[in-house]
Amino acid sequence: MSGKKTKTKLKKAGTKALIKIVLPILLIVGVLHLLSNSNLGEGMTSSITNDRERNLSQQVLQYEDEVEKYAEEEGIGDYTGILLALMMQESGGRGNDPMQASESLCGSVGCINDPSRSIEQGVGYFAHTLEKADQDVKLALQSYNFGAGFIDYVMANGGEYTQELAIEFSAKKYEELKHTGDYSCIRPEAEEFEACYGDIYYVDAVLGYYDTDGYENVLNT
Image (cartoon, rainbow, N blue to C red; front, side, top):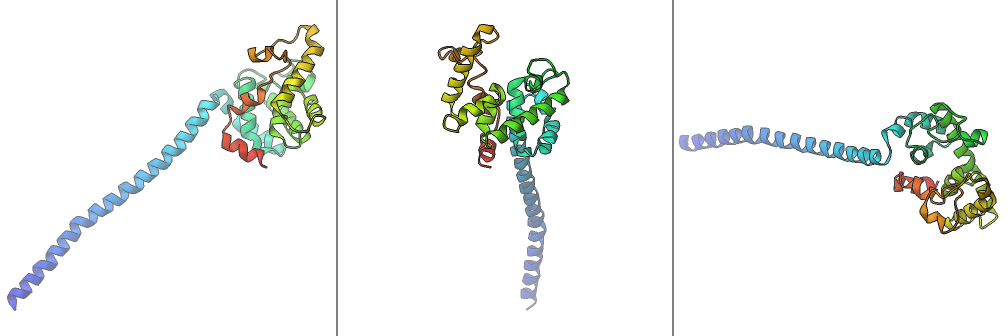
């Protein structure tokens, strides 16, 4: 009997010793697993941020809060990303009129010399074109470049933005205004169409700075 009791005691002692060894190892493995998942999440967030920063310059990103503030005031907070992409296309965030909004305010270049005023005017004008375009983002963007007259032209020719209508409108306006000498093609591709009023590929240029998934979400609102 004493031999059996001794064996039982040894077995229990061995089990306890094994638990003391294995339990800390399991705890360490668990902690490492949690840290690994945490780092993965940080890596994904960092990747998303880096992708965004590759699209938008630091000069543009410094105005993000201000753009969002005015967008919220205009009731278009969901379009903040579109507006930042628009600024990137217009100026890269440089200068005193980063939204290039002077023409929409006073009809000529250079009347805005303050970034905050530029953003306020630019966001307000985009909100106006978006409403007039019946929430058609592409039409609103192209109208930011061409002027709100493009919306009237589109509404009289099918009611929906197309690249062809952008080219037609640009060519028509250029024919009317080329005698002034103020207009020239900013893209070689536009020369074959003689569509040198504004930028006929403005929409694609802006959306090239914007996240596609985010654009689809805005488009479907």
